[in-house]
Image (cartoon, rainbow, N blue to C red):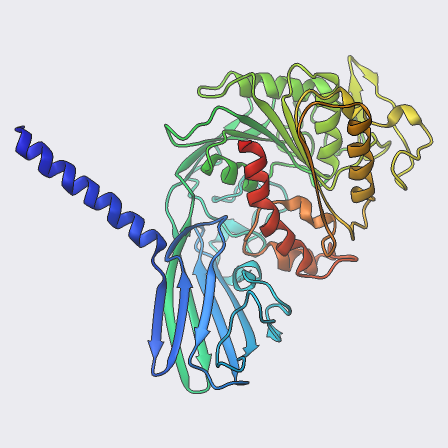
Length: 457
């Protein structure tokens, strides 16, 4: 190949890259008469927000915005929200409340947050609990109308998330209507595989080659148990190889350290250290940069493991945390001996057993605390404040952050932002207790970029 040909190929490749970048930032726009709908960007990551604008409407007129999509399982999803046009004849969900429909209130991503699935449109096996194909997989109690399946999983052992999926936005105002299409998918392609041959049970998500920044993340779900693959997929798509680990209530419960239920048998801290050693041995993972991200009950496991094994854990992020090891919710052990636990879940560090308070000052790495002030499970914000005070008193040299969300509750611990189906399930199953229904999805959307920044820095 001659120099001139190489130069021509180079120009073509560069043009393609520029074109792809332009498409990614271009808005999707539709007009019908004076009515205009704009959704931006046209192509976006699933964990990135959209900007939605409607104009050309009579001031005060009723405007209905509908979003539809078909996920990787073939399940149809939709939301429908009604707004009142402002004095300028515009609608902006980021500043104007939905007054009826799938949700009420101001939520810029409400049309995505509040999508629901149609079980009737699902393939016959997609309502199962373990054998369903799609992300998430190998997770108990997952039904077709609960989670939007982003990834293609040809088996329960392999999964790939590489293609964006179509979301159709349609607006109706009086007799006028307009529709436009956007695509949402992974920030970068990722793959996943089930790991159950090393004494652990989990799903390992791997970033694309060249995007691995060497921090390995161990993700621990809450009292629901099983494997939460939604977070691992998002972390990996942002360059963080992640092991979504089950530590009870999973098909791997015949392995040591994985009981059927958290409150019936002991859970060994060594199980988590085994998982960390396995994660640190994976290609592209720096074993000197292993982090744990825990939510709800998983925060106890994360903080206890980091405190007892400070040379193994190098950073911790906890959502809706507890500051003491509780009796009953889990029976934590170390070297086959039970760790001190408390039966009291009231004010922070006021316990029937002071030894149960987790010694966060023993952790050798940065910690991020995230909580909702309406947490009705336990006082996660006072818990977080108490742990921050303990770190300050110990003159801890690492960077620590606390994010408190006044309108959120315990459900902020689900973490993954803009997940169709999640917010409606929280409401339907009664998980929204003291917070406003939109409090948790708003907090998750605000927290996610802060979490990524905390990991980067």
